[in-house]
Length: 371
Image 1 (cartoon, helix red, strand yellow):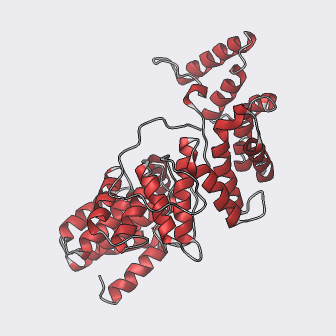
Image 2 (image 1 turned 90 degrees about the horizontal axis):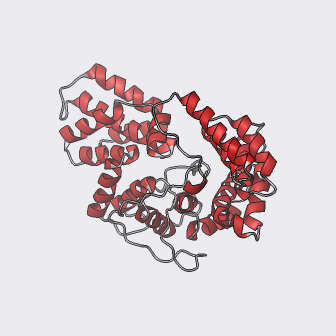
Image 3 (image 1 turned 120 degrees about the vertical axis):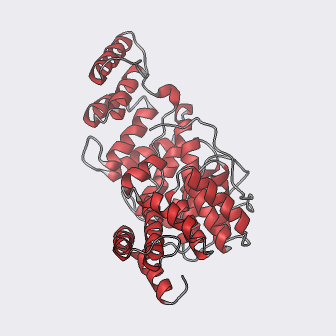
């Protein structure tokens, strides 16, 4: 649960969209992302684990073993607990949480949940996701609702993260009755202001929701992806590039699209990199398309790539699959590279394994002579 405090990167060529319905005032906080319109059902980002930097366990300096550092941290926190420090027990629980010692963390948080909203929040996350305890989404939802509905000033900084997580629960129908409308309402609360990381996720998720919902509202999707991109969200930057490229929710603008996609690709978006491969191939820059695709397909560990870039695994897989297919096409036809049927077959197979839908659509386009 780390709250990012870095300055977000500058926005790409996106322009702020019209005010979204249901939004009062305006804020420029980090949003969450959605894939391009028509990309299939909404896949949610992971839950928001927000913990202010001041609340994180201290980092021990350097040249000891990890076990020794952990033992020293436990010793120091025990001293602070004995000295009456009201935050020491929470910090000890958070130390265990970040070490992956969830059962020990749960014990610490349970002891102070009635007086410490941050501990209550952590317990909500842990029960919802089954960390250190049996998965109990109803209990996780209960804790998040207590935080969201609390009048205590001590709960204020957690309300927006709780709203984001509750929206996720309602959208998935996990721990509560499924309601897309309630999910949208909660994400609008989280997106407008408050906790930066939760707001970013909520903004990006709204962009995804409005792109995937029936009926779609691409103008709202464009607005929220613009907010997200302006606040540094990597996936929204790539999604915004797609919307500019194909004129979804905004007038088609190839220059703005390429600016978004290239910046997102440079920042590590595999999906944006795959889209650039497609762009280069369609414009007959075959050697460039093949060279970029080779770099992308060297690593197809989707989960690792997703964690490294904080992007959705679904779209990471789509990016690698696109790159693999176009590389296979270049190798099969000898476009920009030496013809190699065996290698082409290997990359076609890679594309099919990573995302059968992407591979099938591209195969159909190839059979129809479109690519």
